[in-house]
Image 1 (cartoon, rainbow, N blue to C red):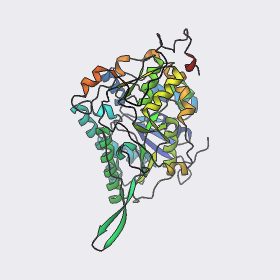
Image 2: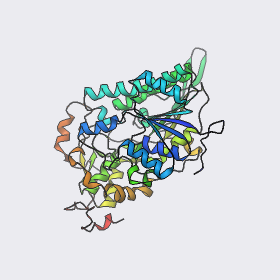
Image 3: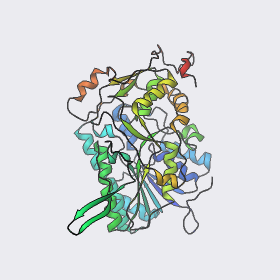
Image 4: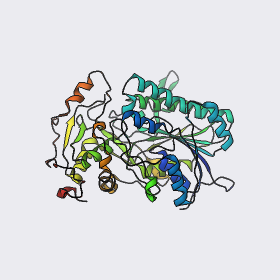
Length: 440
């Protein structure tokens, strides 16, 4: 694999990956290491502790960080350094670390990444605000204090734009507006007005302002990636050895809608569609996530330029259409349940991703990779699933819990369920023939 990430003096590019043990951070670390970068993971493993507190775990078996790193060195010949540190808590230790390592790039994943988790209760709301915003501020503050000329790549969210229908594509971070003034009409580009729909998304909106300020005031080089919902499990690197396998979260807090549907299908459990299912969301495969990170690293803005914002998405789908797609693959029906979120029942979503396509991204499409996720991941590890953790336990508003407890409801008008019957046993059982529609 030829690397386009080289230090200006011809040496190896030094990269810190904050949150490098997580769902996006781990495969990104391996990908950058395989490109020839000198990678250091900074992580306090808090995501693993959160699993234990919620009574769940990754569907895929995750090895210890030590085993993971040893396995990577054995299969690739590349060594990744690991530093146990909580970003956003121990500022002095982080500042001293970057002063010692002197990275060319810092990739910042070190934030609580779940919208449902951020809405569980006042405790989780406060944890998300404090953890995410403090982590981001500590990173840019340390860069400013040390004077390092390092490029910061921050993982944001397309959810900062909100999900109301607009009638035009969401631009990449900035909106051109026209204003009337006494001296006439003038045009200006402003940061796209934030419209977060969860505390998690609120932290990403606050991050935007922090990044904008430090880029302007301290002349930092910053890229903010507004990412869609990530799906998929494996990348080329994580698939090299079973000890390198990536996370697969399926629980109501950290499992994305696709993962939840995949696990439910593997168990022969009706796919639970929140509300009408006519909500449209943006998606990207984990393989494309790691490629986008590398593309962004290789195209850094100059110090002091405004924050470069890239929409890291490849396609948009309605939730109901995802349920139908997985239902056709698995022979599993879907049912509608009360929506725990406060969101439009239906929306259109068009997101511009011209920048990353222009840098060379070739998207992985849902139709191309979904069959493997059904058969190669969800079905293979379905025996590890704790069914009790699949339903969402988070409510966006008081009183929603009662609706969630009632479970499936009738389909809204104009939305029809699949006709396939529910198998008596999970169709992943090798001793049971799968329904004809589920054979891949």
